[in-house]
Image 1 (spheres, helix red, strand yellow):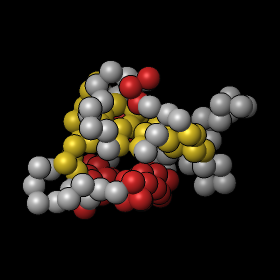
Image 2 (image 1 turned 30 degrees about the vertical axis):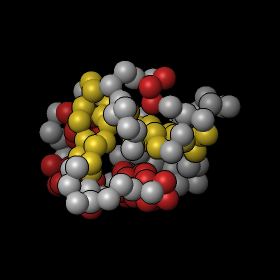
Image 3 (image 1 turned 90 degrees about the vertical axis):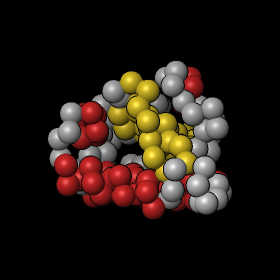
Image 4 (image 1 turned 135 degrees about the vertical axis):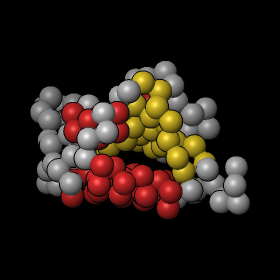
Length: 128
């Protein structure tokens, strides 16, 4: 690990919110799950089964969520993980939307992190 100190739970939550806001700002908050601090930001309401894409009026946060219950490749010293389909998958895996990808990557750099893919539809973060 570099000279960057470990992030606090508050900083990790700020990172998760910044990612969600960035995706919302760019119309890409669709079929995305962000796992952090035992929580999950998601686009699907479990109670109604309805998806809320790019909808700031329906931001869904769930407690007691562990990404290891949904995909196998997760940093054992979990910081933040994501799973995604749709436009975020297109951006990250298929190199679509390069300008948006550049801004997305800068968010992680700002927090002293990089991400590694587990599958083409998920990643986990590590300290630089």
